[in-house]
Image (cartoon, rainbow, N blue to C red):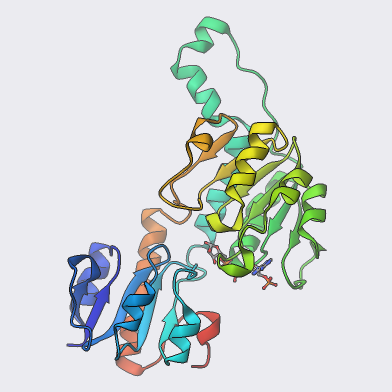
Length: 309
Ligand code: A2R
């Protein structure tokens, strides 16, 4: 059987299917037969370390469990003729739910009010302070792609006005901004859902956060690298930005103490797609890509750079 290098974890179902077709070697075990490895199963967080890719002369394909693949150097892979696949679409609805959940938790002070009940404050001091309505907000989506559109769809019943920023204008009815700061100035809530990587590194900077302003809410379900985390902390501490709901961070799983200490922030441990149902679908597509590549030399969901390879 061909040899597969497993980077990071896989589910039991994935492992069961992979074991029928491959001899599996785990990077975590410390050694692997470099010459023999033809396929890699990895994920969006672990990606493929450059030295690992360089050590595999006969690598043919990398299958990534996740839609974001900024932890894989696709230009190097492509230059070597190595196909890279990912798992788009099957997680759109779940990540969109996470974005909407974070937005609602910020607006309706879910964590504060949960603590209000648990601490006994309700009995001791009376009703909790009022919160803000999620209804009829103007929401700017940074990156109106597959997931961005799913977020817009999920917000529609709330009477939301959607606007968006991306590099190119899309064929949609929402207002387009070619400048992110201008959009941030005009919206109540900014939701980040672009890919990570150099092109989007810290594009949500101090200027954008100040434009969003003291009544504004920032939601990030994309990559921690998209937001300047130090500028975000300073803006929240200074009251220049109102609220933040964050699923992703610059140096995961490390989350700065300053963020953890703030009550106007809702924090999640990068669980945008992390439900049993969606992870099963992502796992199935990750394995389907590997098995189809093995059987036919083709794949189901190549990353855009590898389409047509
Ligand atoms: O810029 P465009 O026209 O290529 O639109 C894409 C936008 N985008 C950007 N917007 C502003 N500045 C950039 N440098 C930039 N680069 C890309 O992000 C498009 O509207 C959107 C990405 O959409 P999709 O490719 O359909 O990705 P999907 O499946 O929605 O996932 C987005 C990301 C993943 O890469 C993971 O990092 C995360 O969500 O889970």
